Amino acid sequence: MQSLIDLFEDIKSNTGIDFSVEISGNLIFGDGSGKGYALKLKNTYGDLYLKDKSASLQLLFKYFLETQINALLDRDELKDAFRNLLSGKSVSPDIMTSLASFIPSGTLFLIESKNTEYNLNLLREIYEERKILIDYYEGFLVLFGDFQEPHDEAMSIYSSIMENTIEEPLVVYLGHDGFIASLNEQYDELLQFMKAGKKLFIGNHVYSKKDMLLEDFFGKIPEETRNSLVVKYRRTLENLDLESTNTVIAYVTNNMNLQKTAQDLYIHRNTLNYRLAKLEKDFNLNLKNIRDLMILYFSILSYRENKF
Image (tube, rainbow, N blue to C red; front, side, top):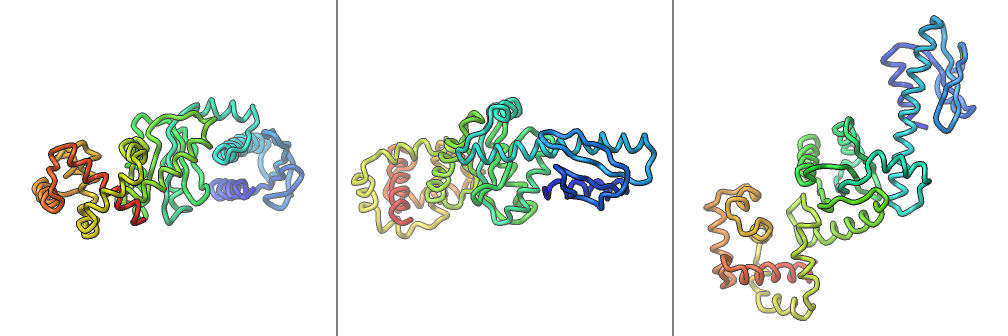
């Protein structure tokens, strides 16, 4: 109801027209004085009251207001359905059909930030002309949309929030399309992935589920084997700083591509070569060898798993 009142306040402010509105028999805006007109609204009924305007202007304003109210009711209906699907609740067949025609499939994004209300309004404004669903749910901003390049979209979301709030949000996404009807399963999967990512990708703020294919394999390695790596390199791992850790993660993520790794870390390639050489010396491993690199990477993951 508050969204309707906010809408009416904006319309009155922008047009200078004094009007009142009843919805479902309840006066929710204005004082109820003036000539009454029945409003054709979706799934409810209402009346408009106007003062001192010509008949033609009154009818034009009535049509305009009906359009605005019904558009808002449609958005609210989709928003409620979006929340219900995220929580696993049922949605009526009619609304499900509307959702499926609006966005049949897409990529789900989970965004963690401090200024949630501000960032929600910011993203709504950015995506105003796009077919997306976005809401605040269980402490996160949740966005679902059909994007050709989900990673580019995730980086754009991250950059937009950074530029407007000077905070670094955490943006994670599944990395593959999912159907609107399976949002609950996608959300649960993404939530678990975010928790795991926080442990493994400390310092990274944008990543997708496909970034953790190797980590999924790591999780299938017997715990005893994983712990043996920590035992072997414990002293060196304990002295490993976040900068070096993120260097290894970026090097693996970028398939040992030095140029791309340096770009992602915002460092010169010579700086990257220096860090890698120091890691090779400290761990007595050859990081140009994929086998040695995996030993180092899995050792870091095992250490983090035990530490956090």
